[in-house]
Image (tube, rainbow, N blue to C red):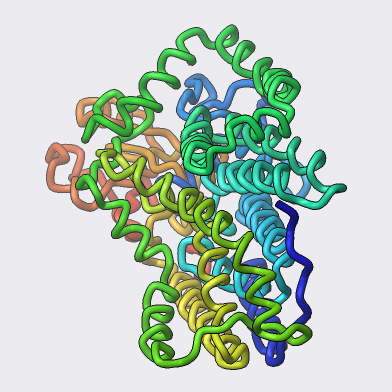
Amino acid sequence: MSTPPMRTDTPGQAPVWWALAAVLGLRLVSLGLYPLMDNTEARYAEIARVMFTLGDWVTPWYDTHIPFWGKPPLSFWTTALGMAVFGVNEFAARLPHFLAALLVGWLVWGWAVQQSRQQALAAVALLAGSSLMLISAGAVMTDMTLAVGTTLAMRGFWLGLHGGEGQRQREGWLLFLGLAIGLLAKGPLVLVLAGLPLGLWTLFSRQLGRVWRDLPWLRGTLLIALLVGPWYVVAELRTPGFLDYFLLGEHWHRFVTAGWTGDRYGVAHSAARGSIWVYAWVALLPWSLLLPLAWWRWRRAAVIPVSDQATPAQTARTVAAPDKPLQRYWILWSLAPLVFFTLAGNILWTYVLPALAPLALLGARWLSRQADPRRVNRWLTGGLISSALVFAGFVGWLNLQPTQDWHTTRHLIAHYAALKTEGSTLAFYPERPYSAAFYSRGQAGEITQAAQLLTRLATPPLFLAVKTSDQDTLPPEVQARLQRQAEYGEYTLFYVGTGTPGAAPPAL
Protein backbone atom coordinates (compact mmCIF):
# COMPACT_ATOMS: atom_id res chain seq x y z
CA MET A 1 0.00 0.00 0.00
CA SER A 2 1.73 3.17 -1.12
CA THR A 3 1.25 6.59 0.37
CA PRO A 4 -1.12 8.86 -1.61
CA PRO A 5 0.43 11.87 -3.31
CA MET A 6 0.47 15.08 -1.29
CA ARG A 7 -2.23 17.58 -2.12
CA THR A 8 -1.59 21.30 -2.22
CA ASP A 9 -2.47 24.08 0.20
CA THR A 10 -6.01 25.23 0.81
CA PRO A 11 -6.99 28.89 1.30
CA GLY A 12 -6.96 30.66 4.65
CA GLN A 13 -3.95 28.94 6.21
CA ALA A 14 -1.98 32.10 7.03
CA PRO A 15 -3.91 32.93 10.25
CA VAL A 16 -3.39 29.37 11.50
CA TRP A 17 0.34 29.63 10.87
CA TRP A 18 0.52 32.97 12.71
CA ALA A 19 -1.50 31.61 15.64
CA LEU A 20 0.68 28.49 15.77
CA ALA A 21 3.83 30.62 15.74
CA ALA A 22 2.41 32.72 18.56
CA VAL A 23 1.71 29.62 20.68
CA LEU A 24 5.18 28.21 20.12
CA GLY A 25 6.88 31.56 20.65
CA LEU A 26 4.93 32.16 23.86
CA ARG A 27 5.84 28.71 25.16
CA LEU A 28 9.51 29.23 24.35
CA VAL A 29 9.67 32.67 25.98
CA SER A 30 7.79 31.42 29.04
CA LEU A 31 10.32 28.68 29.86
CA GLY A 32 12.25 30.91 32.24
CA LEU A 33 9.44 33.18 33.40
CA TYR A 34 8.01 31.12 36.25
CA PRO A 35 9.46 28.86 38.97
CA LEU A 36 9.94 25.12 38.83
CA MET A 37 6.89 23.51 40.38
CA ASP A 38 6.70 20.90 43.11
CA ASN A 39 6.50 18.01 43.04
CA THR A 40 7.26 16.44 39.65
CA GLU A 41 8.98 19.27 37.82
CA ALA A 42 11.22 20.42 40.68
CA ARG A 43 12.10 16.84 41.61
CA TYR A 44 13.27 15.90 38.12
CA ALA A 45 15.12 19.18 37.69
CA GLU A 46 16.92 18.58 41.00
CA ILE A 47 17.86 15.04 39.95
CA ALA A 48 19.33 16.44 36.73
CA ARG A 49 21.14 19.17 38.67
CA VAL A 50 22.73 16.59 40.96
CA MET A 51 23.66 14.49 37.92
CA PHE A 52 25.30 17.52 36.32
CA THR A 53 27.05 18.55 39.55
CA LEU A 54 28.39 15.09 40.36
CA GLY A 55 29.22 14.25 36.76
CA ASP A 56 27.58 10.84 37.26
CA TRP A 57 25.74 10.09 34.00
CA VAL A 58 24.86 6.51 34.94
CA THR A 59 22.87 6.73 38.17
CA PRO A 60 20.24 9.43 38.69
CA TRP A 61 20.48 10.58 42.31
CA TYR A 62 17.46 11.59 44.36
CA ASP A 63 19.92 13.29 46.68
CA THR A 64 23.70 13.20 46.74
CA HIS A 65 23.54 9.91 48.67
CA ILE A 66 20.19 8.35 47.56
CA PRO A 67 19.93 6.77 44.08
CA PHE A 68 16.74 7.44 42.15
CA TRP A 69 15.40 4.13 40.84
CA GLY A 70 12.05 5.47 39.69
CA LYS A 71 12.93 6.28 36.06
CA PRO A 72 15.66 5.62 33.47
CA PRO A 73 18.06 8.48 32.72
CA LEU A 74 17.23 9.83 29.25
CA SER A 75 15.14 12.81 30.33
CA PHE A 76 17.67 13.57 33.10
CA TRP A 77 20.47 13.45 30.55
CA THR A 78 18.73 16.01 28.35
CA THR A 79 17.90 18.28 31.30
CA ALA A 80 21.46 18.08 32.62
CA LEU A 81 22.80 18.90 29.16
CA GLY A 82 20.58 21.97 29.12
CA MET A 83 22.14 23.06 32.40
CA ALA A 84 25.62 22.38 31.05
CA VAL A 85 24.93 24.80 28.19
CA PHE A 86 22.76 27.49 29.81
CA GLY A 87 23.51 27.15 33.52
CA VAL A 88 21.37 25.90 36.38
CA ASN A 89 18.08 27.73 35.87
CA GLU A 90 14.50 27.21 34.79
CA PHE A 91 15.08 27.94 31.10
CA ALA A 92 17.94 25.44 30.86
CA ALA A 93 15.94 22.74 32.65
CA ARG A 94 12.85 23.16 30.48
CA LEU A 95 14.36 23.81 27.05
CA PRO A 96 15.16 20.14 26.24
CA HIS A 97 11.53 19.19 26.88
CA PHE A 98 10.31 22.00 24.64
CA LEU A 99 12.61 20.68 21.90
CA ALA A 100 11.24 17.18 22.47
CA ALA A 101 7.71 18.53 21.97
CA LEU A 102 8.83 20.17 18.72
CA LEU A 103 10.19 16.80 17.62
CA VAL A 104 6.82 15.15 18.26
CA GLY A 105 5.15 17.89 16.22
CA TRP A 106 7.68 17.48 13.40
CA LEU A 107 7.03 13.72 13.29
CA VAL A 108 3.29 14.33 13.12
CA TRP A 109 3.70 16.97 10.39
CA GLY A 110 5.94 14.75 8.28
CA TRP A 111 3.41 11.95 8.45
CA ALA A 112 0.26 13.97 7.83
CA VAL A 113 1.75 16.12 5.05
CA GLN A 114 1.84 13.04 2.85
CA GLN A 115 -1.94 13.39 2.77
CA SER A 116 -2.07 17.17 2.37
CA ARG A 117 -0.55 20.32 3.84
CA GLN A 118 -3.97 21.31 5.14
CA GLN A 119 -4.27 18.06 7.06
CA ALA A 120 -0.71 18.37 8.36
CA LEU A 121 -1.31 21.94 9.53
CA ALA A 122 -4.53 20.92 11.25
CA ALA A 123 -2.78 18.02 13.01
CA VAL A 124 0.05 20.20 14.31
CA ALA A 125 -2.40 22.92 15.38
CA LEU A 126 -4.56 20.42 17.28
CA LEU A 127 -1.47 18.97 18.94
CA ALA A 128 0.14 22.28 19.89
CA GLY A 129 -3.08 23.85 21.12
CA SER A 130 -4.17 21.03 23.43
CA SER A 131 -3.81 21.94 27.08
CA LEU A 132 -1.67 18.95 28.01
CA MET A 133 0.77 19.41 25.14
CA LEU A 134 1.05 23.16 25.76
CA ILE A 135 1.85 22.64 29.43
CA SER A 136 4.06 19.59 28.89
CA ALA A 137 6.06 21.29 26.13
CA GLY A 138 8.47 22.78 28.61
CA ALA A 139 7.65 20.94 31.82
CA VAL A 140 10.54 19.03 33.36
CA MET A 141 9.34 15.43 33.40
CA THR A 142 9.85 12.10 31.65
CA ASP A 143 6.57 11.93 29.72
CA MET A 144 7.54 14.09 26.74
CA THR A 145 10.60 11.96 26.05
CA LEU A 146 8.35 8.89 26.19
CA ALA A 147 6.00 10.58 23.71
CA VAL A 148 8.94 11.04 21.34
CA GLY A 149 9.65 7.33 21.59
CA THR A 150 6.06 6.16 21.02
CA THR A 151 5.47 8.60 18.15
CA LEU A 152 8.72 7.58 16.47
CA ALA A 153 7.95 3.88 16.88
CA MET A 154 4.36 4.12 15.64
CA ARG A 155 5.28 6.23 12.63
CA GLY A 156 8.24 3.97 11.83
CA PHE A 157 6.05 0.84 11.88
CA TRP A 158 3.41 2.27 9.55
CA LEU A 159 5.67 3.98 7.05
CA GLY A 160 8.09 1.06 7.20
CA LEU A 161 5.25 -0.96 5.70
CA HIS A 162 3.32 1.59 3.66
CA GLY A 163 5.75 4.39 2.83
CA GLY A 164 7.25 5.14 -0.55
CA GLU A 165 10.00 2.99 -1.94
CA GLY A 166 12.77 5.22 -0.59
CA GLN A 167 11.00 5.58 2.75
CA ARG A 168 10.32 2.09 3.96
CA GLN A 169 13.77 0.97 4.98
CA ARG A 170 14.60 4.24 6.73
CA GLU A 171 11.29 4.47 8.57
CA GLY A 172 11.36 0.81 9.54
CA TRP A 173 14.51 1.39 11.58
CA LEU A 174 12.79 4.29 13.36
CA LEU A 175 10.41 1.77 14.95
CA PHE A 176 13.27 0.26 16.91
CA LEU A 177 14.93 3.60 17.63
CA GLY A 178 11.64 4.80 19.10
CA LEU A 179 11.36 1.74 21.32
CA ALA A 180 14.94 2.27 22.51
CA ILE A 181 14.15 5.90 23.36
CA GLY A 182 11.08 4.80 25.30
CA LEU A 183 13.03 2.19 27.24
CA LEU A 184 15.58 4.82 28.24
CA ALA A 185 12.91 7.44 28.94
CA LYS A 186 10.40 5.50 31.04
CA GLY A 187 11.13 1.81 30.76
CA PRO A 188 9.17 -1.24 29.53
CA LEU A 189 5.95 0.77 29.50
CA VAL A 190 6.78 1.77 25.91
CA LEU A 191 6.55 -1.89 24.87
CA VAL A 192 2.93 -1.89 26.03
CA LEU A 193 1.93 1.51 24.65
CA ALA A 194 3.43 0.70 21.22
CA GLY A 195 3.21 -3.08 21.22
CA LEU A 196 -0.49 -3.24 22.06
CA PRO A 197 -1.74 -1.22 19.06
CA LEU A 198 0.89 -2.71 16.73
CA GLY A 199 -0.08 -6.25 17.68
CA LEU A 200 -3.82 -5.65 17.47
CA TRP A 201 -3.56 -3.91 14.10
CA THR A 202 -1.40 -6.72 12.74
CA LEU A 203 -3.91 -9.36 13.87
CA PHE A 204 -6.99 -7.48 12.69
CA SER A 205 -5.48 -6.74 9.30
CA ARG A 206 -4.14 -10.31 8.93
CA GLN A 207 -0.74 -9.05 7.85
CA LEU A 208 1.49 -10.94 10.25
CA GLY A 209 3.56 -12.41 7.42
CA ARG A 210 4.12 -9.05 5.79
CA VAL A 211 4.95 -7.35 9.07
CA TRP A 212 7.55 -10.01 9.84
CA ARG A 213 8.99 -9.96 6.34
CA ASP A 214 9.15 -6.22 5.68
CA LEU A 215 10.55 -4.96 8.99
CA PRO A 216 14.07 -5.74 10.32
CA TRP A 217 12.98 -7.41 13.54
CA LEU A 218 16.17 -9.32 14.31
CA ARG A 219 18.56 -6.49 13.52
CA GLY A 220 16.20 -3.98 15.12
CA THR A 221 16.07 -5.98 18.35
CA LEU A 222 19.85 -6.12 18.34
CA LEU A 223 19.93 -2.33 17.91
CA ILE A 224 17.66 -1.91 20.94
CA ALA A 225 19.85 -4.22 23.00
CA LEU A 226 22.98 -2.30 22.04
CA LEU A 227 21.43 1.09 22.81
CA VAL A 228 19.58 0.18 26.00
CA GLY A 229 21.15 -2.91 27.55
CA PRO A 230 24.46 -1.41 28.73
CA TRP A 231 22.80 1.24 30.87
CA TYR A 232 20.44 -1.23 32.58
CA VAL A 233 23.33 -3.58 33.37
CA VAL A 234 25.68 -0.88 34.66
CA ALA A 235 22.88 0.77 36.65
CA GLU A 236 22.20 -2.49 38.51
CA LEU A 237 25.90 -3.04 39.12
CA ARG A 238 26.36 0.50 40.47
CA THR A 239 23.33 0.35 42.81
CA PRO A 240 22.13 -3.24 43.36
CA GLY A 241 18.36 -3.52 43.79
CA PHE A 242 17.51 -1.12 40.99
CA LEU A 243 16.02 -3.70 38.62
CA ASP A 244 13.80 -5.27 41.31
CA TYR A 245 12.36 -1.93 42.37
CA PHE A 246 12.07 -0.49 38.87
CA LEU A 247 10.54 -3.49 37.12
CA LEU A 248 8.22 -4.74 39.89
CA GLY A 249 7.50 -1.56 41.84
CA GLU A 250 7.30 1.02 39.09
CA HIS A 251 5.80 -1.26 36.43
CA TRP A 252 3.40 -3.33 38.46
CA HIS A 253 2.45 -1.97 41.87
CA ARG A 254 2.35 1.64 40.75
CA PHE A 255 -0.38 0.87 38.21
CA VAL A 256 -2.39 -1.91 39.86
CA THR A 257 -2.06 -1.15 43.58
CA ALA A 258 -4.10 1.93 44.52
CA GLY A 259 -2.30 4.06 47.07
CA TRP A 260 0.82 1.92 46.72
CA THR A 261 2.98 2.51 49.78
CA GLY A 262 6.19 1.11 48.35
CA ASP A 263 7.13 4.32 46.58
CA ARG A 264 10.64 5.19 47.77
CA TYR A 265 10.44 8.79 46.63
CA GLY A 266 7.08 10.15 47.68
CA VAL A 267 3.46 9.09 47.65
CA ALA A 268 1.75 7.15 44.87
CA HIS A 269 -0.91 9.10 42.98
CA SER A 270 -4.17 7.41 43.95
CA ALA A 271 -7.08 8.05 41.59
CA ALA A 272 -10.42 6.43 40.88
CA ARG A 273 -10.14 3.72 38.26
CA GLY A 274 -11.25 5.06 34.92
CA SER A 275 -10.07 8.60 35.71
CA ILE A 276 -7.80 8.50 32.67
CA TRP A 277 -10.82 9.24 30.45
CA VAL A 278 -11.63 12.39 32.41
CA TYR A 279 -7.98 13.37 32.23
CA ALA A 280 -8.08 12.84 28.46
CA TRP A 281 -11.00 15.25 28.10
CA VAL A 282 -9.14 17.88 30.12
CA ALA A 283 -5.91 17.19 28.24
CA LEU A 284 -7.61 17.91 24.91
CA LEU A 285 -9.05 21.29 25.90
CA PRO A 286 -10.00 23.51 24.12
CA TRP A 287 -10.54 21.00 21.29
CA SER A 288 -12.68 18.69 23.45
CA LEU A 289 -15.14 21.61 23.58
CA LEU A 290 -14.61 23.18 20.16
CA LEU A 291 -14.67 20.09 17.94
CA PRO A 292 -18.02 18.77 19.25
CA LEU A 293 -19.37 22.29 18.81
CA ALA A 294 -17.97 22.37 15.29
CA TRP A 295 -19.60 19.03 14.52
CA TRP A 296 -22.92 20.37 15.77
CA ARG A 297 -22.55 23.48 13.61
CA TRP A 298 -21.49 21.53 10.53
CA ARG A 299 -23.66 18.44 10.90
CA ARG A 300 -25.87 19.42 7.94
CA ALA A 301 -22.97 20.43 5.73
CA ALA A 302 -21.87 18.10 2.97
CA VAL A 303 -18.85 16.07 4.04
CA ILE A 304 -16.56 15.78 1.05
CA PRO A 305 -12.77 15.49 0.79
CA VAL A 306 -10.97 18.70 -0.07
CA SER A 307 -8.48 19.20 -2.89
CA ASP A 308 -7.57 22.19 -4.96
CA GLN A 309 -6.20 20.18 -7.85
CA ALA A 310 -8.36 17.07 -8.14
CA THR A 311 -12.09 16.66 -8.56
CA PRO A 312 -14.03 15.44 -5.50
CA ALA A 313 -14.50 12.03 -7.10
CA GLN A 314 -10.80 11.69 -7.87
CA THR A 315 -9.82 12.83 -4.39
CA ALA A 316 -12.27 10.43 -2.76
CA ARG A 317 -10.80 7.51 -4.68
CA THR A 318 -7.30 8.67 -3.75
CA VAL A 319 -7.81 8.89 0.00
CA ALA A 320 -10.62 6.47 0.85
CA ALA A 321 -8.93 3.14 0.19
CA PRO A 322 -5.65 3.69 2.09
CA ASP A 323 -7.24 5.92 4.70
CA LYS A 324 -9.48 3.39 6.39
CA PRO A 325 -6.70 1.05 7.64
CA LEU A 326 -4.64 4.08 8.65
CA GLN A 327 -7.51 5.51 10.67
CA ARG A 328 -7.96 2.17 12.42
CA TYR A 329 -4.26 2.22 13.21
CA TRP A 330 -4.48 5.71 14.72
CA ILE A 331 -7.58 4.71 16.71
CA LEU A 332 -5.81 1.69 18.20
CA TRP A 333 -2.78 3.84 18.99
CA SER A 334 -4.83 6.53 20.72
CA LEU A 335 -6.83 3.98 22.73
CA ALA A 336 -3.80 2.01 23.94
CA PRO A 337 -2.76 4.33 26.83
CA LEU A 338 -6.36 5.14 27.74
CA VAL A 339 -7.47 1.51 27.92
CA PHE A 340 -4.25 0.38 29.60
CA PHE A 341 -4.52 2.99 32.36
CA THR A 342 -8.28 2.56 32.84
CA LEU A 343 -7.72 -0.07 35.53
CA ALA A 344 -4.66 1.68 36.99
CA GLY A 345 -5.01 2.98 40.53
CA ASN A 346 -2.06 5.40 40.41
CA ILE A 347 -2.12 7.77 37.46
CA LEU A 348 -1.50 11.38 36.44
CA TRP A 349 -3.07 13.32 33.60
CA THR A 350 0.29 13.30 31.82
CA TYR A 351 -0.26 9.60 31.11
CA VAL A 352 -2.56 10.77 28.30
CA LEU A 353 0.39 12.37 26.47
CA PRO A 354 1.27 9.38 24.20
CA ALA A 355 -2.31 9.47 22.87
CA LEU A 356 -2.21 13.11 21.76
CA ALA A 357 -0.33 12.56 18.48
CA PRO A 358 -2.79 9.97 17.07
CA LEU A 359 -5.78 11.96 18.34
CA ALA A 360 -4.42 15.04 16.55
CA LEU A 361 -3.97 13.01 13.35
CA LEU A 362 -7.52 11.65 13.61
CA GLY A 363 -8.96 15.09 14.32
CA ALA A 364 -7.08 16.56 11.38
CA ARG A 365 -8.34 13.79 9.11
CA TRP A 366 -11.91 14.54 10.12
CA LEU A 367 -11.44 18.27 9.64
CA SER A 368 -9.92 17.72 6.20
CA ARG A 369 -13.19 16.17 5.06
CA GLN A 370 -15.17 19.31 5.77
CA ALA A 371 -16.47 21.18 2.73
CA ASP A 372 -14.98 24.58 3.55
CA PRO A 373 -11.31 24.67 4.60
CA ARG A 374 -11.58 28.39 5.40
CA ARG A 375 -14.12 27.59 8.08
CA VAL A 376 -11.86 24.85 9.46
CA ASN A 377 -8.92 27.25 9.58
CA ARG A 378 -10.98 29.84 11.44
CA TRP A 379 -11.80 27.28 14.11
CA LEU A 380 -8.18 26.20 14.37
CA THR A 381 -7.04 29.81 14.68
CA GLY A 382 -9.60 30.52 17.38
CA GLY A 383 -8.62 27.45 19.35
CA LEU A 384 -4.92 28.27 19.22
CA ILE A 385 -5.52 31.86 20.29
CA SER A 386 -7.69 30.76 23.21
CA SER A 387 -5.01 28.31 24.36
CA ALA A 388 -2.34 31.00 24.12
CA LEU A 389 -4.42 33.50 26.10
CA VAL A 390 -5.21 31.04 28.89
CA PHE A 391 -1.57 29.97 29.17
CA ALA A 392 -0.32 33.57 29.12
CA GLY A 393 -2.83 34.40 31.85
CA PHE A 394 -1.56 31.52 33.96
CA VAL A 395 2.08 32.58 33.62
CA GLY A 396 1.10 36.18 34.35
CA TRP A 397 -0.79 35.12 37.46
CA LEU A 398 2.28 33.28 38.74
CA ASN A 399 4.44 36.36 38.28
CA LEU A 400 1.94 38.80 39.74
CA GLN A 401 1.71 36.83 42.99
CA PRO A 402 5.31 35.94 43.85
CA THR A 403 4.70 35.86 47.59
CA GLN A 404 2.21 33.07 47.10
CA ASP A 405 5.01 30.73 45.93
CA TRP A 406 2.41 28.42 44.41
CA HIS A 407 3.86 24.89 44.49
CA THR A 408 7.40 26.25 44.70
CA THR A 409 9.86 27.82 47.18
CA ARG A 410 11.86 29.98 44.77
CA HIS A 411 11.02 33.29 46.42
CA LEU A 412 11.43 31.91 49.93
CA ILE A 413 14.95 30.76 49.03
CA ALA A 414 15.69 34.21 47.54
CA HIS A 415 14.43 35.84 50.73
CA TYR A 416 16.70 33.64 52.82
CA ALA A 417 19.67 34.45 50.58
CA ALA A 418 19.12 38.16 51.22
CA LEU A 419 18.71 37.78 54.98
CA LYS A 420 21.27 35.12 55.83
CA THR A 421 24.01 35.96 58.32
CA GLU A 422 27.48 34.50 58.64
CA GLY A 423 27.29 30.88 59.72
CA SER A 424 23.52 30.64 59.29
CA THR A 425 21.84 27.74 57.54
CA LEU A 426 18.35 27.02 56.22
CA ALA A 427 16.25 24.00 57.14
CA PHE A 428 12.70 22.95 56.31
CA TYR A 429 10.26 21.33 58.73
CA PRO A 430 8.74 18.76 58.51
CA GLU A 431 9.90 18.10 54.93
CA ARG A 432 12.05 19.80 52.34
CA PRO A 433 10.28 20.43 49.01
CA TYR A 434 12.12 19.46 45.85
CA SER A 435 12.14 23.08 44.68
CA ALA A 436 13.97 24.05 47.88
CA ALA A 437 16.70 21.54 47.08
CA PHE A 438 16.99 22.90 43.53
CA TYR A 439 16.98 26.63 44.34
CA SER A 440 19.33 26.24 47.30
CA ARG A 441 21.65 24.08 45.15
CA GLY A 442 21.22 21.28 47.66
CA GLN A 443 22.19 23.41 50.68
CA ALA A 444 18.80 23.58 52.40
CA GLY A 445 18.41 20.96 55.10
CA GLU A 446 15.45 18.99 56.38
CA ILE A 447 14.21 18.39 59.93
CA THR A 448 11.51 15.76 60.09
CA GLN A 449 10.96 15.36 63.85
CA ALA A 450 10.08 17.93 66.51
CA ALA A 451 12.72 16.44 68.80
CA GLN A 452 15.37 17.22 66.20
CA LEU A 453 14.32 20.86 66.26
CA LEU A 454 15.33 21.27 69.90
CA THR A 455 18.78 19.89 69.14
CA ARG A 456 19.24 22.07 66.07
CA LEU A 457 18.06 25.25 67.84
CA ALA A 458 20.88 24.81 70.33
CA THR A 459 23.35 25.94 67.64
CA PRO A 460 21.98 29.14 66.06
CA PRO A 461 21.83 31.08 63.84
CA LEU A 462 19.23 29.17 61.88
CA PHE A 463 16.56 30.03 59.36
CA LEU A 464 13.67 27.62 59.66
CA ALA A 465 10.95 27.24 57.03
CA VAL A 466 7.96 25.63 58.68
CA LYS A 467 4.95 24.33 56.85
CA THR A 468 2.21 26.70 57.95
CA SER A 469 -0.21 23.87 58.69
CA ASP A 470 2.32 22.35 61.12
CA GLN A 471 3.19 25.45 63.13
CA ASP A 472 0.76 24.68 65.94
CA THR A 473 2.38 21.27 66.44
CA LEU A 474 5.75 22.77 67.34
CA PRO A 475 6.81 22.43 70.99
CA PRO A 476 6.17 25.66 72.98
CA GLU A 477 9.89 26.08 73.71
CA VAL A 478 10.54 26.05 69.96
CA GLN A 479 7.77 28.52 69.16
CA ALA A 480 9.11 30.91 71.79
CA ARG A 481 12.43 31.24 69.98
CA LEU A 482 11.12 31.75 66.44
CA GLN A 483 11.29 35.23 64.88
CA ARG A 484 8.84 35.37 61.99
CA GLN A 485 10.29 36.83 58.78
CA ALA A 486 7.79 36.17 55.98
CA GLU A 487 5.25 33.75 54.62
CA TYR A 488 5.52 32.17 51.18
CA GLY A 489 2.85 29.79 50.00
CA GLU A 490 2.75 26.74 52.26
CA TYR A 491 5.77 27.79 54.31
CA THR A 492 6.57 30.48 56.88
CA LEU A 493 10.19 31.57 57.24
CA PHE A 494 11.51 32.05 60.78
CA TYR A 495 14.87 33.13 62.22
CA VAL A 496 16.49 31.74 65.34
CA GLY A 497 19.43 33.71 66.70
CA THR A 498 20.45 36.97 68.30
CA GLY A 499 19.80 40.36 66.78
CA THR A 500 18.23 41.03 63.42
CA PRO A 501 19.14 38.89 60.39
CA GLY A 502 21.06 40.33 57.42
CA ALA A 503 19.82 42.63 54.69
CA ALA A 504 16.32 43.58 53.71
CA PRO A 505 14.37 41.03 51.69
CA PRO A 506 14.63 41.28 47.89
CA ALA A 507 12.08 43.26 45.91
CA LEU A 508 9.57 40.86 44.33
